[in-house]
Length: 157
Ligand code: 4NP
Image (cartoon, rainbow, N blue to C red; front, side, top):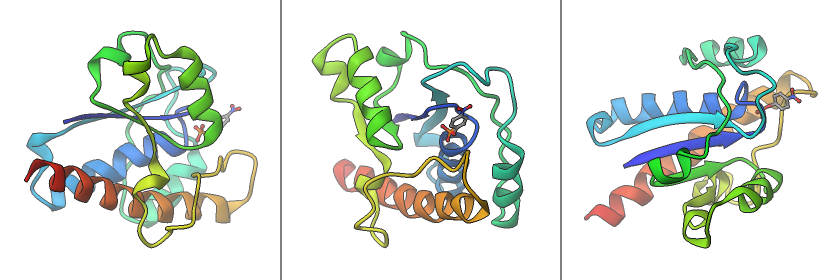
């Protein structure tokens, strides 16, 4: 299963999702069955490491974000089985860019898989906000990634 996480800049939410997903898969002994990556809808931060605030919060929770920001490419639409985005704005942009309706069927929202945060409808952009926004991103994405793995595992059995 190949999963691509998408956000706007690929320096906060989607690299955090990629890192959390890889750690949870490793803990569950499932790493070999998955390929995980992340990309941005925009190329503003191409070639940069994740936002230093996101990396600092990640480290406190035991995560080391090593991803280098890259924009989503046309080839990604064929390469990935699931394209998991963060908010309705991401979803709209993906719907405009999808080469076909079948390709857009690969797109889902991360919060669809939340259990603890079952009322959350997006992973809010923390870029212009305070420290608590980064903590909330981690909390939501841990919940979402656990739920996503459960969802895929159920489909496999
Ligand atoms: P992300 O956050 O989409 O979670 O990576 C953002 C990062 C950068 C910008 C916006 C959102 N920006 O406007 O540069």
